[in-house]
Amino acid sequence: MQTEQQKEPQTASNAVENQEVALKTVFDDKLNFNLKHPLSRPWTLWFLMPPTPGLEWNELQKNIITFNSVEEFWGIHNNINAASSLPIKSDYSFFREGVRPEWEDIHNKNGGKWAFQNKGRGGNALDEMWLTTVLSAIGETLDPTGEEVMGVVINMRKGFYRLAVWTKTCTNREVLLDIGNRFKQILNLPRTETIEFSAHEDSSKSGSTRAKTRMSV
Amino acid sequence: TPKREVLSGVESLKSQPKPSASLDSLLQASIISDISKIVYPSSIKRPATEGEIKDGKLLYDIPFLMQFQTYYTDKPAYGWDEKMKGTVASAFSDKSSR
Image 1 (tube, helix red, strand yellow):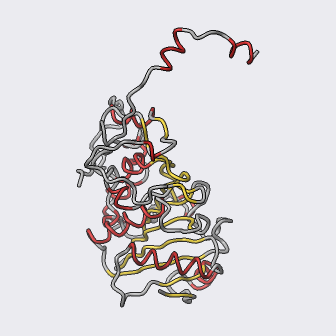
Image 2 (image 1 turned 135 degrees about the vertical axis):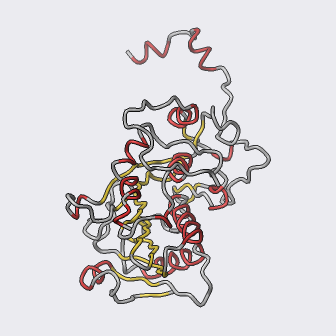
Image 3 (image 1 turned 120 degrees about the horizontal axis):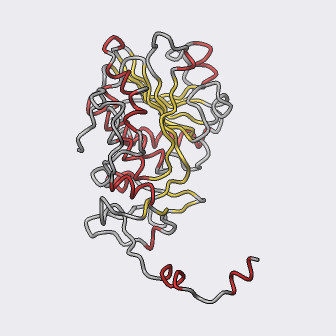
């Protein structure tokens, strides 16, 4: 059946298909573009709601949207509240599709995180750091292997915030140090400032702020 | 920077999604298969990571990605405001959680 169809002579519709269609990115025409920039893999935005009456702990983590193009990312970023205005005890996370931003997820349970913590709500400086962190993850410039980084997260807490990069392992030392250095550079931190790596296993045993540091850069 | 949508629940849940040319374009656009063949306006800086595909990964540097900020400002999906109302917006509008 297939072959018979393929043998048919050129028809009017074939001719139309062969006509040149002007290819336009969003830079050529904001309203009427027909090409978009794919990402290496789909990413999911999660929002951890602050404790809410009537919701169990495991109901607070909300899967907002999965996307796989640069244009979609900006549609999200331009239409969502800024990270610095997150309510206390809430998070934004961008994780690989299929990975929940939780220690218990099979992709995370042997992993760890690089974290930068600072006092206050962060303001514009935090919004900029969060944006560049997310862009480095989805643009694949944060992880030289493409295997380690599972996601990035901002935790807003009482009196401080924390930005973190979650990795699949906590043993792949050379690669993890590379990622830590890239993260520090992306955050544009002064050399005197350090960021620390801890294993999820240690964090889950001792509470997120008390985990022992396995590496720092 | 683009104006942020205020997700304060001002719009009615019943309001119909308005036709949006740029969102329609986003949903219908084809995926670029070879970025090296794309001709950008002269004001746009190409990815520094030209060659882009390394070990099967598409690399986009941060300055390249930042350029899109003012070019795609529409919603990422239909029903976005409604979706936000049940999740992000309700948390942001609840002062007691601050």
